[in-house]
Image 1 (spheres, rainbow, N blue to C red):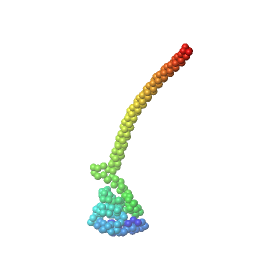
Image 2 (cartoon, one colour):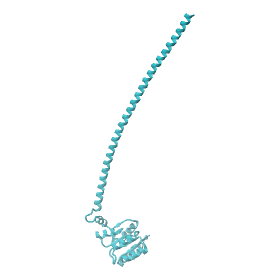
Image 3 (cartoon, helix red, strand yellow):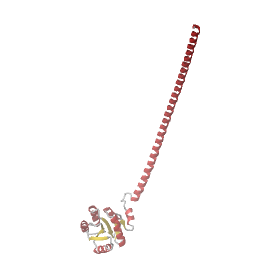
Image 4 (cartoon, rainbow, N blue to C red):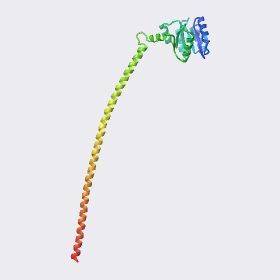
Length: 240
C-alpha cells in the first residue's frame, strides 16, 4: 500500500484528487492539507510515502514547503502538481527536492502511475517538461548538461589516446630492453661456449701429453726388461 498526502489550498482540488486516488486498490489517501504549515504537521504525524504538493499556497509557499520536507523528511517523496509549466517553476521545484512535476490537468491514470513510479524511486515529468528541464539545467554563463556530456566524452577520448600512446612508449621501451638483454644473454652464452671449448681442448692436449708419457714409460719398461733378460742369459751362458 502507498500512503499519499494531498496538499492544495483549493478544497475542490483536494476532494477530486482524493476521489481519484482512492479508486486505486494500492493507493490510500491518509490525509490532506491546505497550507505548507499544515502539510508539515500532517507529514510528521502520518508519515506518508508520497506527498502531492501544489506550489501556490498561502503562508509558506510550495517551494519552501518542499525544501523543508526534503530536509526534515527525506524518506517522503514529493510530486508537484501545478498549473504552471514555466521552466523557472520546474527548475526551482527540482532544485528544492521534487521527485516529479505534473500539471493539474494530467489524467487520473497518468497521475496514479506517476505516484507508483515515484514511490519506487523514479522521477516523473509531464509531457514536454523533461525537455525544458534539460534545456534550463545550465544557468547563464554555465555549460548545459548536453555540452558537459560532450566535453566529458571528448576528455575521455583524449585520455584514452594518451593512455594508448603511453602504452606504446612503454612497449617500445620494454622491447628495446629485452633486445638489449637478449644480446647480452647471447654474448654470455657465446663466451661460455668459448671457455668450454678451450677447456675441452686443454683437456685433450693434457690427455695426449699424458698418453705420450705413458707410451714412453711403457717402452722404457719393456726395454729395461729386455736388457735384464739378455743380461741374465749372457751371465748364465758365459758364467757357466
